[in-house]
Length: 262
Image (cartoon, rainbow, N blue to C red; front, side):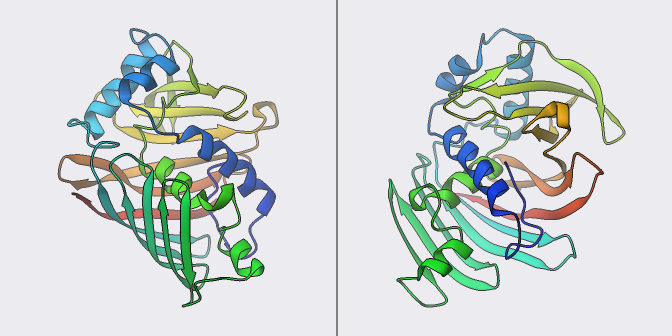
């Protein structure tokens, strides 16, 4: 689902489509109180852990209440540039803008509510092939708002409406370190994947996540988080590396290079 694109021109479109359908639903707007109600009892150990993590990363409740700018850079599995963009998230998460380079092209993209516009390589009316290559033909054109809204908004987006947070916290390991984990599934209209989120046991910092389409088949991917991109009260996971669950194959990386709250 949360597919990093190791090669954006050749990456399996079916898997990205499945991922984008989940993100579109899971990244819907909602207040933190609404999210807690949707995720389960607020006094469960898992809900408390998620709230601790949100308090670590966003202690002032900035996400979803103020406009945020950030610089996002990503590489493919070969280390070459995959994406380099400036992102702007509106205060209510409905407005979004992206500008920079993706898949070898320049792009200017903006969403206001459900209305969007894009210019690719200077062309304000891209043809169908370009729309598909730039993922502008997905989710009625709002794919990028959903995609980056979910990725950049972790851990705040974990318990969005539609989430089913298992009540218990698991003590486990992730990438060789002792962590606490929560398991999240989603209402059928949101998505069918199973997610695990991993937190530092002392600070509740989000250190990784994993998702499965079919857990018994060990499909899907996992993401490791390192470092913090700090700005004006936000502390977002900075470095992200993506791997397949089966075989631990490296897919690529992302980095939030700067964060500014407006």
